[in-house]
Amino acid sequence: MVMARIYRPSRTATQSGSARAKLWVLEFEPAAPRQIDPLMGWTSSGDMRSQVRLKFATQEEAVAYAEKNGLSYRIEEPNPVQRKILSYSDNFKSTRLDQWTH
Image (cartoon, rainbow, N blue to C red):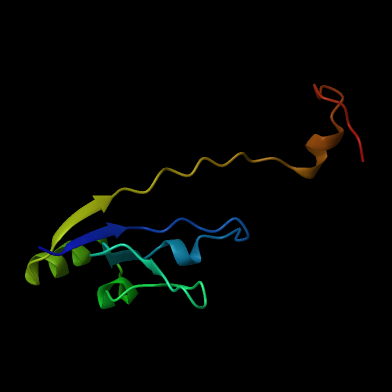
């Protein structure tokens, strides 16, 4: 049976916003391990499903698609984002514990 993974991708380290992390993604698990090409050293796979990434607006839509097409699926819940709100002036506080260097 075909296994799928449903998750919401996290933002990359270079992004400050969450624009690309709003959609839910359905990816298929690889059916076979990747193989290394002896001539060029590239990794390749004969599994065409590994190239498919379906995007959905909600988790429920992704689950409905998987159930409609008879896919077994696994849902990975996103980790909560913990933001540490700092202002620039916090660098110059007199109560700052560590040394200030530039």
